[in-house]
Image 1 (cartoon, one colour):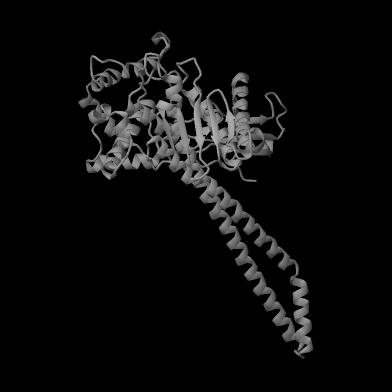
Image 2 (cartoon, helix red, strand yellow; image 1 turned 90 degrees about the vertical axis):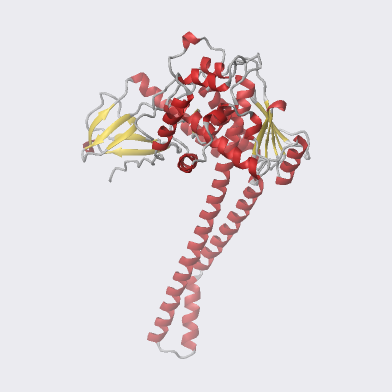
Length: 481
């Protein structure tokens, strides 16, 4: 984990408008999943779900176990073991029946989410009125229109559906009336740039949310990359098939070579040596070509996976802004301050999304390293400046503004992560108080939130961030055969 003081926090109830009496005194903390465990006789221990045998079964029954691995800040995955011979298992640690079923439901939900992602073609039904019209998909939270090939908007629609659902769990809405966000997904970079020009914007990010229009515009190289990936995969598959065909013809080719050498009068022993060398050379060439094809496939897969991660991380960022605008802004027009809105958007951006929840359990390592470096070299934005920053200070224009914006974003992320995860003080009433109070300034409101003067809070916050270590991946236990 990050440090002994860090707890996994669910910001459920962050939205304004909930009675203060219903809130805990500081933040809303949720525990990690409750897991069952088995201990092997060689001393190794695995955590997850005991699928079988049930309690009270015969002691010699085989064990079926689903190992749950949740590395901090990284996607969860499952390893299904079984059957494990009962003689290899030293002990069980079971959950009570109700909690066992809750865990089983969560694992089913995780598998269902994975299956839906893999089968978005069948789970997302796009519509359009004509062949030249945009694809359309509508829910209560958003209306998506896209000019990209159908596979791209299907994936985006599925991810947005999951994101808005997870955000509603993470931060329950304060506004009852549904105000769907318009989402425009551009099929080309040129279309995205034209959409920015029409909105009077110019941003490098692959997605942007415009609150005044309740419009999220997304555009990246994803459609082109998907097409390139498909073409490369087909070319590599064709090369692999041709290689298999040539390999299947090897015996005939070697037989023809031996016959030709015999006609030339070459002695039998020398003929056999030539044929054997030809066989070895082909096997070497075949292995090299197979390795080249496999390497090309891995490189192509890695490139498209990296592009997807980057695009959908930014989509999660902008989806937070859209959700906060539509579902969290009170009717009096007040809202959360810019630093908190942008900070939480970055926290959401780097959180794994799985089984209907966003896991806030680790600091983004890139942002963490950058903020720690800014502390060391003295370029970190002072918190007083951050707290008073308005929305315009988070929109980059020219080079100097981009540098200032970078500092503001970095400080906003570090402060939001601290208040949400490390020292949780965010509750519905405290966030509402941050957005109100014309009689005092942003610093005074923040000091009320954290219960101390800013000059005392800031050095403590810096020390907490400076002491954080990037989350390390957890190695799963792999039982020996």
